[in-house]
Length: 109
Image (cartoon, rainbow, N blue to C red; front, side, top):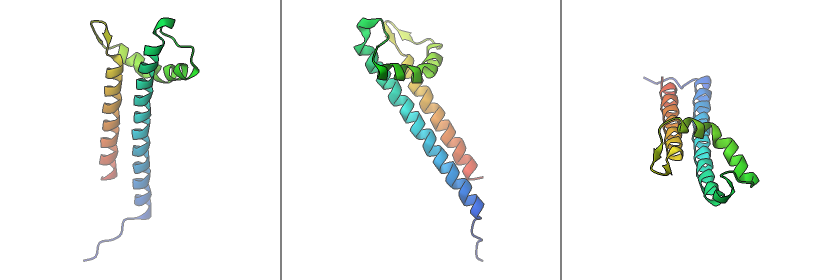
């Protein structure tokens, strides 16, 4: 018995799901790298009151502020070490993995 080929619209849906999942992965990676860049710039601007005058550092702060503000609401200090960037990176990773898992489930319904 010969199986019927999948319909053209089903192939398009799978391609859209694939590219959307790749977009989510890249967006999560970019946010992770932006948080790491923010950490590095914060080390170099410690003498200027915490905010850098560098345009790139200001852009990184603007991009990562929504995620970092959510992470700062969770108790996040150990002594003098601020763990909110680590909490934000772990949260981004968990969200990306959840979205990819759900998209995989949708693709194989």
